[in-house]
Image (tube, rainbow, N blue to C red):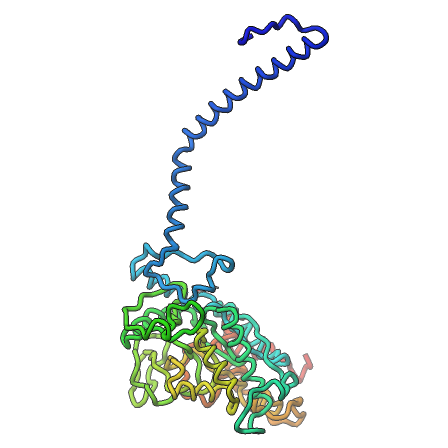
Length: 451
Ligand SMILES: *[C@@H]1O[C@H](CO)[C@@H](O)[C@H](O)[C@H]1NC(C)=O
């Protein structure tokens, strides 16, 4: 109609076909007009939404411009792997600090993960760890120990002291070695390593959360600078960029323990040494029972963060990838000592930058004496003696103590620095049953009724 076509010719043959086609063209024109109108309408209507989407994209691009927020492991966050990193550019130092403190008290205590080394046969230790983690709210990954039958001399480092290391000591070193190796191969952020008999306070999460801001203050008080990091592309490579000068350290919620400043951070050694004990920072922590002795100084309800002088026991320590690389290298050169002495020597020679806590927040547990577990060799995987059932005639005066305490677990005797307010394993009965320790007696097997 619009183009003056004749719509009366609707019947028969070629002309009809052409008319049909023209009317289709006509419909297409109307459709086009409707489409254009609709597009204009939609653009008008959602104008605001489209503009803000564009702005977000711009902001995201700006994030890639390096800000003041330091990224300790650039490659761990490369585009191909891992979640996009958080943007903290708009937060004030105190907001950063409280976010970092919050993360320091999360289920992995602010570390990337917590790895727990345990022998296949130690179901008892696996269960004790499961109960503790459950009560304290920790997420713990099992990491297989290296069993004696997996050690073949052909795969061990050379040694100056052939025949001196026990099979258990070799396996123990290697389990730690496997974590160090994994840590540098994956460029993993700091990992907390726990040995099978680790124990801690029920409030370990708040304890670590409270510690984090003080740890930052400690590092600032000693003018700490990042440890040399040889990994490819690291801004902390001193060989390439020179030794750094001190800059005030800002809290980092992605790495609450500021791991670029250390190789190793022990939170559960059995002994510390005198070297560097005066490089310290004391803060109030009401979960520490008062009266502990710090190198002749009487302490109140306080905890000390210190530069390590050399630790024994690797019960609970965090490792950064620089520390993992140093330990892997050092032990590849010779394996003359058990793993904790190897670490101790590297701290004493100051090749390993290490910090520790007094009192430590983790320790080793053992069975209360006199319940037949020493006879089984269950008190230690390395020096535990022969594995066997408790002999039928074993002397077991310890059950009396168990009845009073409702617990078979205690902290290992030789840890003189340990000070827990509420050791998770000692509290397990009260916590889980919601009952007094004495209530344990009611569920004991009764030899008179045989029930
Ligand atoms: C705890 O915080 C650290 C550091 O921000 C993080 O890497 C880790 O994934 C967090 N753990 C959990 C269980 O969210």
